[in-house]
Figure 1 (cartoon, rainbow, N blue to C red):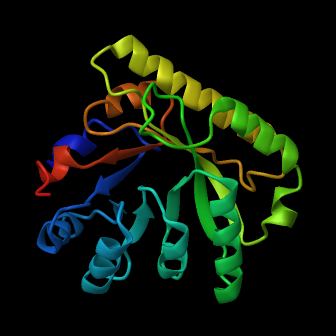
Figure 2 (cartoon, helix red, strand yellow):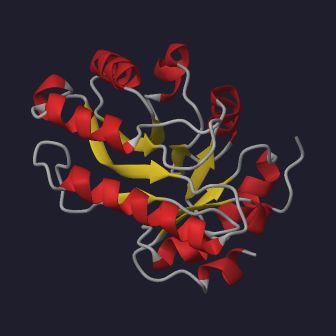
Length: 219
C-alpha cells in the first residue's frame, strides 16, 4: 500500500501516515518500509506509541488538542497541525518556553460546510493577522509553518475543489504578511485517503493518509 501510494505523489509532497487507532506493529511495519512521518489525534495514544517506537519518527498531531494536554507532547512533537485558536497558541507558547523548545505549528482553518469541524474562518484568520502583526515577538516560542484544513465531506468533486482552493487562498493570505512565516516554504496540509489526489492538484504540500495505507481502523 505504501509503495502504491508513493508512486502517485509528486516530489515535494510529504505523506503523513495517519496511524491513529492502528496498533504499534502496523506502525513498525510502515517504519520498516522507510516511513518516518506519522499522524496521531489523541494524546494518550500518541504517548504510548512514542515510547514504543523508534525515536527518529517525526510525530504529527492532527486532532483537536486539549489545552490541558499541550505540555505532554511538546518535548518531542514534530508539527502540530491543528492549532485552532489564539488561546491554544498562547498555551503552546507558554509551555514551550518552560522547556526552551520552539514548536512548529499549522493554523487550522474552517471552510467546510460542517459544524463539527473547527478552526479559523477566513474572517477570523484575517482578524488574527491584523491583530498579531508582531507575531514573532508576541509568540517567540511558536513557529507558524502554514495552514491545515479539510474539505466538506461530500462526493461532489467541485465542492471539494472549492474547499481546497479556499484553504490555499488562506495560506497565501498568511504568507503575504511578514512576521508569520519565518521561511520561504509554505506548508499546506490538506487531503486524506479519499481526496488527496485532488488536494495535490489544488496545491497541497502535505497529505494525511490512513486507510489507504493501514486499512480500516479498529475503533
